[in-house]
Amino acid sequence: MRRVIVIGAGPMGIAAAIGALDRGLDVVVLERDEAGSSLRTWGATRFFSPLHMNVSARMRELLGDAMPDPDALLTGPELADLVLAPLAEHAHVRAHHNVIAVGRRGLTRADYAGHPLRAERPFRVVCDNDEVFEAEIVLDASGGLVVPRAIGAGGLPARGESRLGGAAIRTLGDLMSHDLRGKRVLVVGDGHSAANAIVWLERVDGVQVTWAIRTPNLRPCDEVTNDPLPERASIVERANALAASPPPFLRMERRAMIESVARNNGHVAITLSGGRTVEADCIAAFTGYRPDDSYLSELAVEVSPVTEGGARLYRAIANITDCLSVPKVSPRDLQSGEENFYFVGSRAYGRSRSFLLQTGLAQLEILLDALSS
Image (cartoon, rainbow, N blue to C red):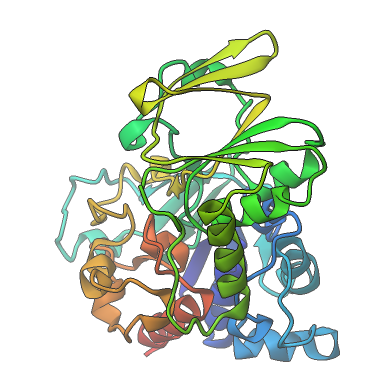
């Protein structure tokens, strides 16, 4: 029986483990925290897509009567608690197993690169608790949104950013956990997380928000014509309406990039491009994330220079701009260059904004069918 290691116990990791077990493979899932831990950073933020788009048919079957309403728009913590946690034992999840290195037994990345002999050696996966696992197949479902990107211009750190420590708010859950009544908040970014943040902050008593965006657009958040996801359309519409005609609580700074940040008597002094200045009690930075590839240094994987996800998948979907329009891919598009090592789910997409769980689950089925054929 071939052994499979899945890295990460989010929706894709759990689905991958269940799918592999159903195909007769020996599976263990290594999760650095608890199942669904990243979803718990969402706070009260809801999925744009209904639950039936975010779980596999087999996951629904295993949940049985405990399966929530398939049409529900769950929050991140609700999906973690109601769906992933009950399935974790079935999926053979080992919590608190943080993977720090993956390689081939006895080989560096340069040994027999591209040669069939390399694939004869099993993978060795090392965790920070000194446990070591071996397997013939590794599915990396660690997620594409792991390492926060810098808040400065061009994705580089702003002057003084390294000295802020953990002062910047980076997740919606963190934002919602703060008492921001009467506070001054600088929101950075114009993606869906920033849109959710602005819509939530509108309801906070006495808050004063400065929204810094790179574009000159009156309506900064991308809108999808006839959007089939009503929740996404609603959030984007409200955030854009606020930006286009700011109410008293909101100040817009367009064509604005962060040049420097510094602590100032318990506050944060920020300099924007063009010499503009803002003083805030906190910064809510929704500038995106990138994958963590620190544990892959001894694997000969092909990584996209654009997304930091899978290079072959990027080439297959490079022209796609909306997550609901991703075409079907082939097993070759899902290969990493390292035989039997695969990026799955959002880890395969990296920085790309076109990932949708429904698409990742469909691609996972293509991959698992190929592995078990």
